[in-house]
Image 1: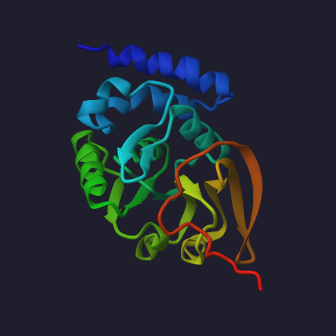
Image 2: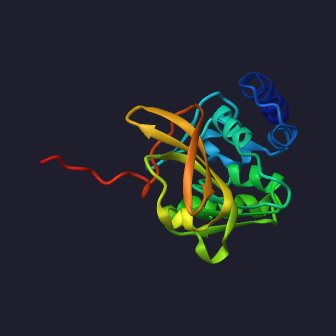
Image 3: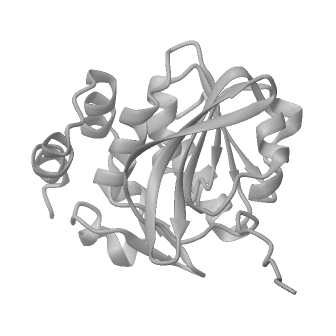
Length: 217
């Protein structure tokens, strides 16, 4: 049987710490949460490899570095209510739940939502709820939120998501421009978002987060 505990330590020591992720709550969560539980059985041996894991239908579980750096850029506080967009199989949900007061995790792929709910339940994560529905619509009835974490690629963030964020709240997402991308952190002020670049990263575009094509006449 694979020693997943040692692989988890190696992941943190060789992928996470060297990426300038130093905040204790993130390191503790990534050392504690069994990533292998949240990947498909057939790919369990790939759980700690330094690469994204393909989940099908254009979706991925992001690599540990990208997840850790997103969390480093916008670390939840113990009193925060977090909206997660793109729960996939629940790994990032479990990490957030370890740091925040509560997490509402939206997933529109029915199979992934079902897996996430089962995985979180099996692991005893009781401060996270998986909502099956449109990623771009979020979960207004559970808001407003202190923070929004988007674990996937975007070209823009829909107003419906921004409206669910508290004034002064933050959003972290990976903005894609063709094959290139960068993670950005936004803060809501006066009902509008202002963004700063955090680090370079790429991720598949999430459904509902692409810009409408513009036409020149």
